Length: 512
Image 1 (cartoon, rainbow, N blue to C red):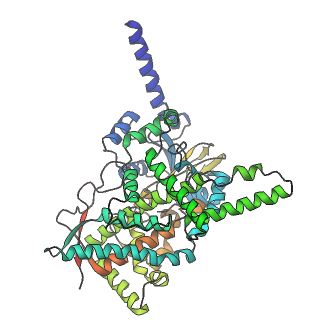
Image 2: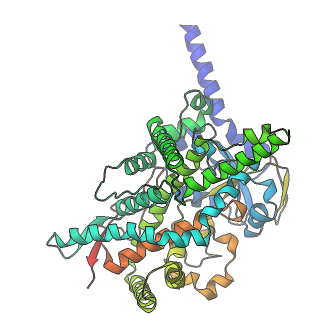
């Protein structure tokens, strides 16, 4: 019995040491730091959904108002928070070769996420970025307007009919539900080449898969972050096994059918298949010259590589874009003056040009201001990171900080967006911050909803276009109104998904 008690005490002591040792990191490096709470409390708050990411980032950001750089912790992971725009410019652009990669603590062993453009490192990332860049050029986006508009029209027709089938003067809707169904249909078509209508077929596999992914359980996050070796052993991924099998089979079948029937559709899968053909040609050319092809063969795109890129675009396009659309609709509902001004611009430009296309959307300056201000106030990714891969020095107003390889840089997007030094009265929704005059005065390293520098989100223009078309279609047909339960101001819920704490329903009123 004594042996069991001693063994238990030793085991608990070792576990305590393992779970708390990282909280000594900044102290050991002599860097001033902020600790919100210990790892046990942080884990507990996350599991019971008392953890609100926006609140935690703002607490870290405001911990030392006079400091440009200091240490913080996120689930025991030490990070160097950078608050100074000039230092951020150096890290993200000027000295990018020192900070090329994201950290991989969360997706290192994930079957698909780990092979995605977001997770890839160094040369593999550069090669994949080069392959993916043509997908999001202006000419490709121009061709997507009709497709996106069709998805928007599906929503309008569906809710216009529901509006007519009821006696009330307004139609109560769940704006997040509408947004996710729209983004689901768009990604299904633009990435996988499959036409889906998530309103007439609400239980389609795409929508169910996306819904399961965003309900990512807290215990799995804790497991991956705190026990990476066990996660690797059990092959625990970002999503469940059957979700991965669904996407893998879908892409394999798509590739097989397109190859057998010589089908060409200019989407992400097609561009990746074309890139693989070029790789294979290069291998054959070198082989014919008796050159070594081991490196080229090793880097040849596999079906799983292609699936990984399609998966990450589905993941980001399903939830993050829906968040942006939902919060934009909310802000328009509680700021009717902004909504009326935007509706007038949309109607005027469509009437003047006789149609809605890519060029007309680009002329909608106020729409761009509304979307930009929504991204400032509600960035889907409130913080981003970089990992140091080469020794680096940061010069602050007071000292010089040695950044060692492996150290993690935290870029507090939300903190910068809400800093009154850069955005006066930051809690106010004010699209005029982004008019031509104010935009020209803005420091670009204080506003980065999609990141900054070479590692900026490759799909940012697609996201903005998709959001604009969603709002255009909705506002042409309806006025968006708050309900009697719509929270003003809005308070976020705890958990790993950005959503309101209370009711997020809005009302649609059919326009004349």
